Length: 251
Image (cartoon, rainbow, N blue to C red; front, side):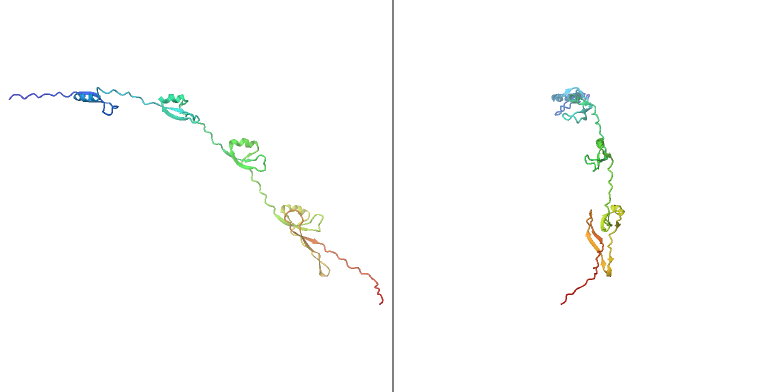
């Protein structure tokens, strides 16, 4: 009988904010909210009441472009990007801000063909290819632009056979071989084309007088051939008939 007992009211656990240091990871503090009743355990391993301090934000290092001169290799400047904080050290050894100057591009020397006259050998012109920048020096000693003229090829002189009448000795025709280009001069003094003809004459009684004589040409130049020479028939004298008295001695 009577009223029910009034239940004991357990007040709700108060929440508090702490800076929690995770065990084994003390570089990563975390702001968390816990029941106030759990605080003693957190405090025991180093947590602190209140939010964790806001970490100082280090701004990212600005990048700058510089022309870097490698120590000991100053002929090879390089455009590179560095942290601005590193600039003083680079500046100290001669680097400059900004990109390196673009190197001047020297165009490749153009080639030209010339007719080269070798000094001391002007009978032997040669077609060669040189750098155009070298042309003034070649021009100064007589070279010309372009290939050397193609030399005219003189065909080999053809040989012909003629009957040659030696001047002052027209009774001794000779068969010889000459260059065709020499023919007009030979023709002018009575030579004829082709071998000399052997003349044969009939003697009394049907006998042949005269004859041909073949001999090696004693003339000038190559191509000596057997010569045919006409000889005059030799004249023979008839014995003189005289009247003689034949005296016989008596026996």
